[in-house]
Amino acid sequence: MEFCLPLAVLGDNDRIRAFYELAKSRGLALIIDETYRDFHSAETRPHDLFGDPDWSDTLVQLYSFSKAYRLTGHRIGAMVAGGRLMSEVEKFLDSVTICPNQLGQRAALWGMQNLSEWLAEERIEILKRRAAIEAGFQNLQGWKLMGAGAYFAYAEHSFNINSTELAQQMVREIAVLALPGSMFTPEGSMDGAKQMRFAFANIDVSEIATMFERLRSLKV
Image 1 (cartoon, rainbow, N blue to C red):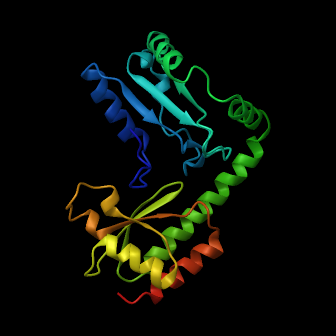
Image 2: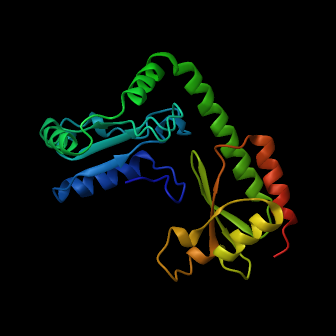
């Protein structure tokens, strides 16, 4: 389960616990990908599932260091699960990857040991960018923001054009690149035809303002 992708929705404790209780009642594992946890807007933990004495019977937490320490491509992550499941995972890893690359492991370890303050500053910056995205869409005619997470914003447009064609027009006429919702929905979906995903983690607040200026200038 990953709330941030593709809809950029932040999962709160009540929602996550509801999924947890459902999985638990059915004897299923709940796998939560928390790659974006370092940039969560809440000051508290996003959930309290690890406080349950029997969490290991149901919960599996996945994490990637790619976002926190900019290690995209090194494929270094972490997994928290019960001992019985971990022993089975180790068998699988020994048959597939054997060992992740050492450079990535060393970088992740160094990051955990030395970059806590830097990561806290990065979180503040990401939250500023998210706030700029939310404010920009409020004043953007023809668009409705559906969700904004750590790296992405998902929006709906009201234009008489499908999202695939709109994405091409945006690149061609205003040099703004966004992914059409059709990339995240079944073929022929009416929802996907009216939705777009914007990535804002790699542009600062001033560049976000420029993006909205360009979107306002677009003639659809």
